[in-house]
Length: 210
View 1 (spheres, helix red, strand yellow):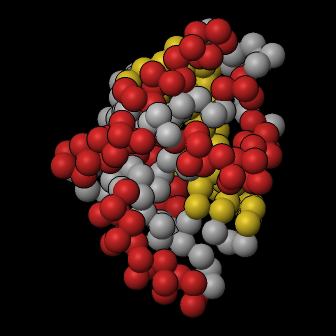
View 2 (view 1 turned 90 degrees about the horizontal axis):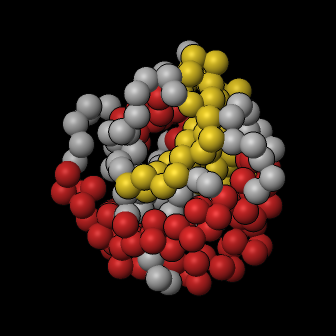
């Protein structure tokens, strides 16, 4: 972990999401229908406590899963374009939206019972720094919930993901070869659950602070 924010890379990723914010839901619609929606439901089944922070709330694809819950929830994203599209439904549900960076969370220590993120840490320039910030704002008994795509365990696939990663980062700011389980542990968490959702590329993680 560097401990310092890569401002240039962070700005690049933010600008990319601002550019595609109007088309984001359309671009992800096939995967949303085929896979993501039911995976989100699995993740929310593991939510605990009333104080919840969602990192990278984006256009608000997780917002339907907050309905009917008695929560004090906050959604954070660094893209004003993405937050604009999430705002109407978030207001309806009473969820506060905050523009901010996962690598420097604007919250005091030990504020949240659950922090969750779905397909976010592929884009955070320093994922361990971001995960360490989550650990800081989680209560000691709190829970981290993640859906992520990661470096495959298959050696042949992993080799191709590593080869292609520089291109995907340069073009769209997304890393396709993150070793997320290792990053979670490096940030000071114990992993309670690690489920393969689609081969070993998509995973669900449940962790708590050490």
